[in-house]
Image 1: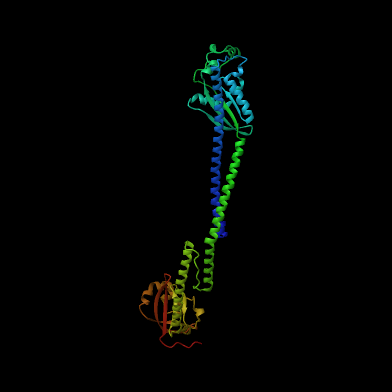
Image 2: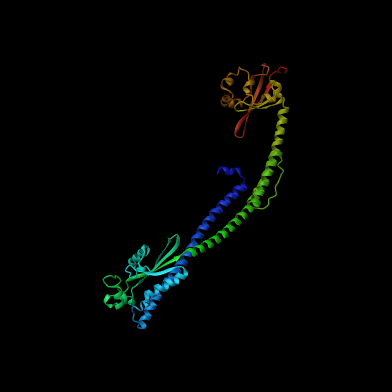
Length: 417
């Protein structure tokens, strides 16, 4: 995400918010799709269940009324056989509504009732599990999504009239379906004799699913976009604008060195607390700066007006302070002396200093030098020597030691040429 650093905080924040909302949007659409799909599937199965149940009830109704009316079936009344009536009515109604209903059996008499591979598989499942009341699945047939639904029915007394013992079957049934060629005899009461099989095209339901999903997409998309806009505006005016004002004020303080600039908190929230803390910090820094300037002024007045030479240097010997008296003593200007190794001002007779180097020598001898005043020979810029009394003191700055040497000539040094 290194490329995001090129953008401003508002842009990065808005991108992060949009990314988070996009993830939630995708998840919402996904779960909404599953919910709507499940709803459509439930509706489809319920419709198939209702139609199948009507086919079963029609068969049972016909069987009951044939018995009550003592209607004797014959070749001329073949169309009154309950399973035939149920099949034909289902086909007529289904043709108008776009679905198909027919009855299938492993031991079929009518070739139209032969099961296809899907139906044969479900018939085997019904036969293996007597508690299974229905089964269904969505499949593709000819490029169309179709709900395949099956509901088994078991042999009843009315069924055994034509499918029980061959000798009990009506003569016209035995003539139409000879025993030696037909396998639909010898069923027993309660045995699965077949199933209602239904095909329900999912085109209309799929269109309904698409419309509902499109509506949810528009709704949730509008909600998420509105939420992103509101959050973006809140960030812009509630967070980023105060931060930009604070940044501009800090920049102004850095450029001008004035710590009297103050900001008015827009609210007493976290950003307002940050602004208030900045105001307190600026006040403290202003006070500290004023004290530091006063201290520096006093120190400068003290060093500039001192008759003795004052040289400040770091632990490695680099000079950081060179007062006017030191300029007169050594013949170097302040600009020339700053950054110079203090050892260059000491005569060669101070062998240990020159052999070890300033840093190593101070590390070994600083404790002794800090406790006594020594006399040593020093060198002017011209190479002339003269003796001085040297007093050394040490202080700390940012955890690092620095030294101040006060030099007083034991005799009046030669005049500067």
